[in-house]
Length: 265
Image (cartoon, rainbow, N blue to C red; front, side, top):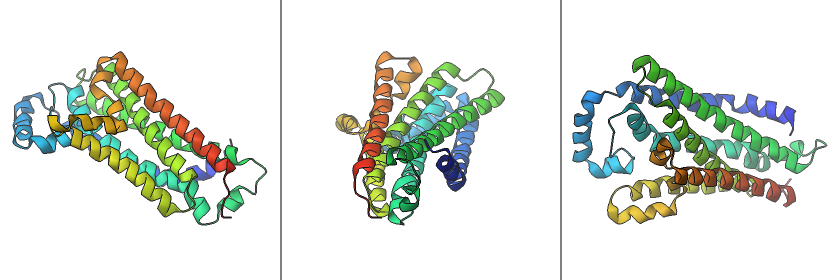
């Protein structure tokens, strides 16, 4: 790994990470503060009045506990969609933008092999995703303990966040691989946006009604089983492991592909 390049990426992308952490902070703190067991019936009435809309965003069942409330409103959609946008932007910044604007020639001028340079970019992306998940985990736990002491099921909540990191690693691997195979930012952006948006839209459609339920098998987000992870279900852990494995594998494929292909330098 190239430590100098890693430090450069920190300087170039720290503001982007901070912006997305701020957005996640706003939603995380607001949703946590909204929890009120006495409002359960009112929220259920709202969900019943617009069942398809609430179901599409994974909010059909708001739950009676703080864990169910937070996981339903945040982890069902928001904490997948916003980091997904971050991954699209970051993957383009780490690879295809360098090729597109000609800066890759300067990176490759150093006496290091291509795969080491791409490994550095890959590690940087993984580091950002870990920081993001650890941050939101600590944030919500802190707010939960401050506002509702003892209400949050910490073990189950931590397991959900392990799953969240899994789906983000998968999207990160997909977008990183696409960027490694593209010469232009617009091409990789189009591919990456299509993958993330498609996955989210299909997940939303699959939750609208029973007739669309089988559509869930066409999106990787189905492997992020929030309820199963909260309950410590073995099948949920296997699906979570598949996300991690697929994401890392795709990153490896991207590194190999970039190392062997001809670049328009």
